Amino acid sequence: MVNVDEDNGWVILVNSLQSDSNRLQTLLMHSPTVSIGPLHLSQSQLRFPAPSIEAVAKAVSPKSKSAKMKNRESKFFSKVDCRFAAMFPSLEILIIFLTPFFLLMIFIHIKWISSHSNATKNLPPSIRKFPIIGNLHQLGSAPHRSLRTLAQKHGPLVLIHLGSVPVVLASSAEAVQEIMKTHDLIFSNRPDMGILNRLTYNAKNVGFAGYGEYWRQAKSLHVLHLLSAKRVDLFQHVREDEIALMINMIGNNSDSMIDLSQIIVSLTSDIICRIALGRKYDKKFTDLTTRLMEMLGVFSVGSYIPYLSVVDRLIGLEARADKLAKEFDVFLEGVIEEHSNRNLRMVGGGGRQDVVDILLEIQREQTTDFLVHRDTIKALILEMFVAGTDTTFTTLEWAISELIRHPRAMKRLLQELKEIAQQKPRIIEEDLENTQHPYLEAVLKESMRLHTPLPLLVPRESTQDVKLMDYDIAAGTRVMINAWAISRDPNIWEEPEEFMPERFLNSSIDYKGLDFELLPFGGGRRKCPGIHFAMAINKLALANLVYKFDFKVPNEGKVEELDMSESSGLTVHRKYPLLVIPNTRF
Image 1 (tube, helix red, strand yellow):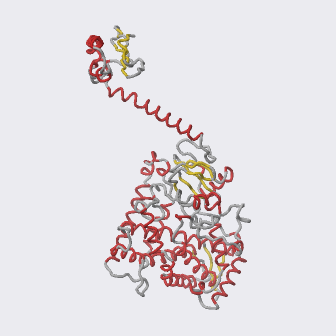
Image 2 (image 1 turned 180 degrees about the vertical axis):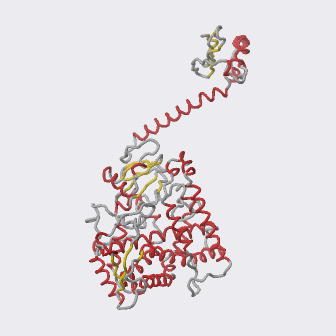
Image 3 (image 1 turned 60 degrees about the horizontal axis):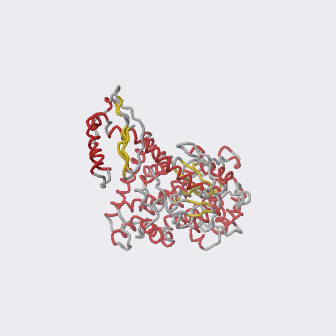
């Protein structure tokens, strides 16, 4: 080893040349310190001459070097420069060899800092995870049930990892109260919904949009113009007309087996079509809506393991989502064009506007500060079908199923409805508005408690570091609320697995988002703005179904043996259609 020079904090060390192999072992320069390690590279590995060593030395050398010192360096470099240029490996090769090493060191350093930082924080209890998939394998086919089991073992606030995404799972009313009330603003954001954004015009709706000015303005359109109590009341005739048609159709099939699930799906779809689009559409549109709901419940690998998003492409998930989004866009574009070519779209007569008319009027007159673009109109219309059709259908389907299985509850509800109807052929909304109907309300609450339409609420995301139940939650953390687990919590509900509408008769607990024990519509800033819209359909439809028909199980089956298995998906409805035989009461 030859020590060439040392002055002002810099050193140049050069390994001796090996005369037998004609290889330069090491030449490394650095200021103010030097790290030496032998490199054994043959001449065949060299591609390009290295820069002039005199130029390199000049670049790192202090300006204050003496003339004597510069002379010594010049003599030394003149001896090795020609051999150095021919023998030292190119920078390209050096970068190829060293880049993985440095990346590994950076990764280890970041992990060390992260683990050291986490060691000083009070994190929620966590579950052992597997590499790459995290805890995804523990979700199973019914995630709300699997996650409740984890919460029962580890506590009401648990840290899990869905792929590479850390998620805080909240499974108690106390935890949710802190999320939706105490720290509601901090937890009002939405995470990137991945493939769902392809189906919602890049999250331009109210449900999936990130918290910010766009979301506030879009929600104000819902609250003030589309789903206000006054606007919902204006569509009363649509609900009454469609429910009357349903009752007549079922009556025409009295004493015959019918698929009540499909009938209820058609009812909710037809009501929303008339309210949102101005008229009903054929079966092709219903099938399109069904495919959309199925797609929203499909698992996307890329949403949880981003570097494996190629899997979504390989299995055709992205292509199917894009194709479905295109089909819906073509349909909605046609609807908007149809409305744009008319001054006023009629809804069942009477000069009433539908939702598309209202949005186009706002866009045309700019009656708000919010610029309503074409995609905004499409996204909000699409959201009415996503949020309204499936969840409303699910509530009605489960309510009828539970009443069939519990004849005593059916009998008590029927008695209340007879008092309301006063022997009229059917019940209208005015009848419900002018009378008390506590048991009807209790049946719907109990149905939504046992069968929460959206068991896992749409995930939230924290916008800053926060303390949640004394645990440290970092900014950007996803929070998943298991509303289904809370609604069956034995610490809150007596006999939580049983259908008991009576539990709500002397209870102030409601479904409007202020009572965190019951959250079918969510709560806080992000609660569903369509509560009044959905419940108006649920009450009138259920009241007329029970008032008009006595439903029997086919093949003289016992009602307690009615299959109550759940489906899997974004919403949880019956796994098998509700097949019944209706008998007209009068």
